[in-house]
Image (cartoon, rainbow, N blue to C red; front, side, top):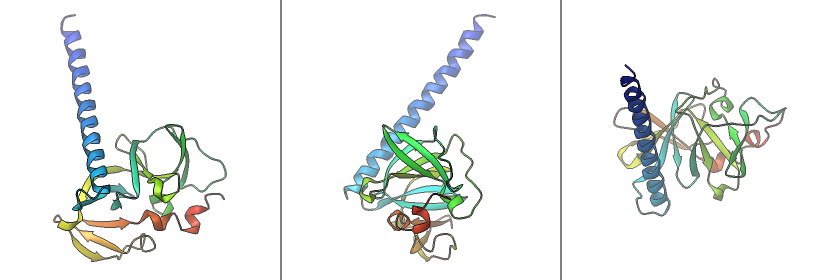
Length: 188
């Protein structure tokens, strides 16, 4: 009986280690592809697909720098409910925004798939968006351009795409988001 217990524990530990290895490999491949897209080596793939507020969004890779796991966020008093607080990213403080909540949607409930997408340094804005899920890189060349009819993104997006599965993707222009007065004033 005691011989079967260590095998069960060992099997679970091996399975958990294999999952972590696959996740690291996926993140490494995604990082390599993001860097290649930024360098212009692969112009076909230039958008990162994410889910915020139950909607699918595309972020330009030149405007997103890192994808980090959701972690300890220090709340800041007297701020809007969409401003979640500060996140320590290797010694730099990052303001974390629940963009879905900013748009008036229900708050994002963090889970194991939640991530923070850090803004690229070129935007000169130490901030990140809380996303429900990262869906990976998307090739917009394989999608059909659509008029932007989303009431939530008209200020920050000029267009949407429809993919082969008839799913709508809204392009979120982070350079426009960081110029929005409401976004810049997090205090109550």
